[in-house]
Amino acid sequence: MEKLRRVLSGQDDEEQGLTSQVLDSSSLSFSTRVKWFAICFASGILCSILGTAMLWLPGGGMKLFAVFYTLGNISALSSTCFLMGPVKQLKKMFEPTRLIVTIVMLLSFILTLCAVFWWHKRGLALLFCIMQFLAMTWYSLSYIPYARDAVMKCFTSCLS
Image (cartoon, rainbow, N blue to C red; front, side, top):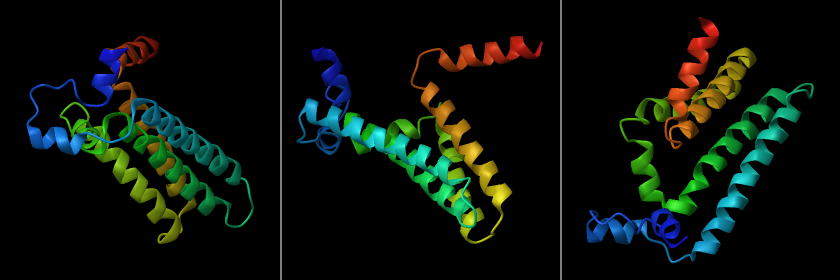
């Protein structure tokens, strides 16, 4: 358990310089970090579900869906900042193994809102929300060892 606490709080990385350790560390206790992670992640899921429910409202339902769904995904993504710290989270997001999916994910957040508010294209907004879901899923799988390889093999075997 102590090893898990050190890894999640960013204290396990002995190769970091003093400046990086100070920027990554937080004055929050481990239990407080876990509680805020759970709160932020749960609110993200709630916003996404609420947005999906608003999709079926007549009139401005698509706008509410896009906003709530995007805010939910951003909240769920930012919840991990409580576990490892914002600087370490950003470094991990832009590692070479996650760079492309991170860019796709961030672009789909922006393009979803652009499609709804500026371009007024409902179908395009829905397509970008699907891209958000797929990018967030692929991004999340990148943290589980060999998960992306297993998914690729599964889809390859299903298509063959």
